[in-house]
Amino acid sequence: MAASEPEYLPERMDADAAVFVISVAAQLAGMHPQTLRTYDRMGIVVARRTRGRGRRYSPRDVAKLRMVQYLSQEEGINLEGIRRILSLESELDDLRRQNAQLTELLEIARSNPGSRLFTAGPGGAVHLGRHRRALPRALPPA
Image 1: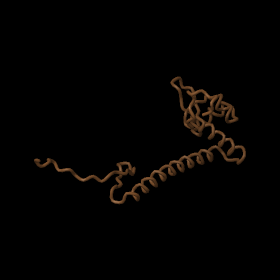
Image 2: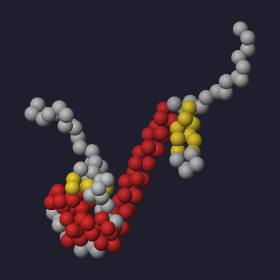
Image 3: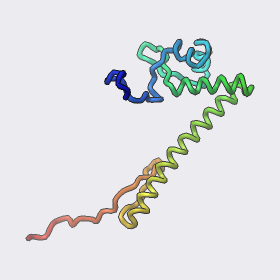
């Protein structure tokens, strides 16, 4: 951290932290706040809400808004097409995370052959567990 920055500031901002009010998010995205409200109602970029129902946007939301604007104005894609693109990108991100987790589990299993096993949860989630020997119900007297 730079010497001039206060110690209480985070080193890195969470990309999903909903910190921007609608006017700031609109300015950062180069849009009118009413456009953000429309996109929110349409489910294109949905803001998180405060207790008082005010909209809050994250840095990731602002990046999506910029992408929406680019796709709409520069590429000529309609809003339904943009909604589909964002949905597919979200699905791709989820699959990449899952792939990374499974790759990590596979590497762990390969580095310790015979000492680990995979189990599947009811929803299909894959877990890595240790193979344990069953202990006798009662220990023999010493």
